[in-house]
Structures are given as C-alpha cells and as structure tokens.
Amino acid sequence: MGLLLAGRLICMTTPSISRYPVPKLEELPEDIRARILEVQEKAGFVPNVFLALAHRPEEWRAFFAYHDALMLKTGGLSKAEREMIVVATSGANDCLYCIVAHGAILRVYAKNPLIADQVATNYRKADISPRQSAMLEFALKVAKDSAGIVDSDFAALRAHAFSDEDIWDIGAIAAFFALSNRMANMISMRPNDEFFTMGRAPKA
Image (cartoon, rainbow, N blue to C red; front, side, top):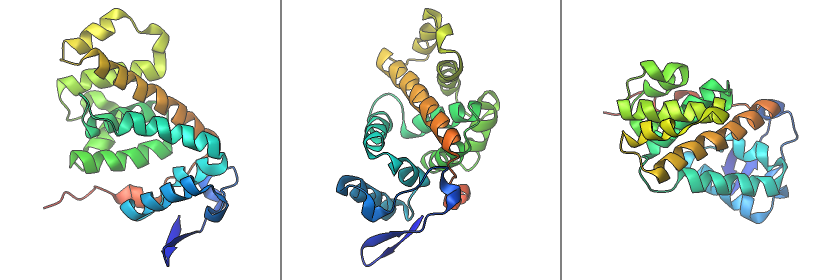
C-alpha cells in the first residue's frame, strides 16, 4: 500500500496487512526497495506480500528468488497454467491471500473472468482441458498428500504429454506455494483491494 510521489514510494501501512511489523520503505536494503518500486511501476500498486515479508529481508530475498525461478521461467507450462496450480492448491490450503492475489493474475493471463473462481472452488468442475485437470490433480496431491505420490501419478501426467521437467515444475510450484500459504495464514496477510476486481471484465 503506498503512493508514488516524486519518484519515491511512500508506504502507508495498516495493521491489517500482517500480524508482524511492516517495515517502512526507507528502512529496507536498496535491492529490496528497488524491486518494490519496480513492482509498483508495473502493477500500479504494491502487493502486500512484498511489504509483509520484508519483515525479514534475507528470507524475502530467498522467497522471491525461488518464486521467480518457478513462475517466470519458460517451459512446458504456460504462465496461466502456473497460476492455476497456485490458485487450486491455495484453495485447498484455505489461503485467502494467495487465492485472491493469484486468482487475479490467473484471470489476466487466461483472459477469462470466470476461471479463477472455478479453479479455487473445485477444479474438477472448472472449464479447463483434461490435460490441465490432470496437472491440478497431481498438484493437489503434492500439496495435500505428497507421501502418497507413486509412479502411476507420473505416468498419468506423461499420458498428457507432460515431460519429467514439466512434472518437476508442477510439483515445485505446489510445494513452494504450500509454504507461502502457511506463511500467509500464520501472519494473517491481507490481500490488496485491487486484486478483487482485476481481470473481472473481459477486454473487448
């Protein structure tokens, strides 16, 4: 939450963003401050996750480095499919922040105002392809029952032309956001109001 004035982000934090103290922008290391300004420039606002997790700068760096490695890479999964995994597993983990924030990103990437609500509630009834349904079935198993994963789970994905590297990506995204879900729930991280309306109206 903040305003960009004369090229500087002026943070206006509220107690509801996190149970933990949210540092002021000027208190943060330069690399973190620069990334936050970059995000605000692109999105028009600062997602609360960037501010709330800055409570611990070293962990912030590690978190976003792994996030970027998983979510910004090229490969067999589209950006929308990566976000589908986040939304479906966050729904299973009851993470309000990630459902709302990544649901917004999914709507934008998929150019579909309905998809995020469907996937978050019950991916089996969502308007997605059989291939994407198989992807989410595996992701949910990683998120909720990783000890139960067997070779046949891999075979089911290979039948839909997912490579072993794609399967790693599916599992890694589900596992990473299981951590994110638990951290967001623990600190009671609040979604930005802006996320709720993003991508709701289809573009002409």
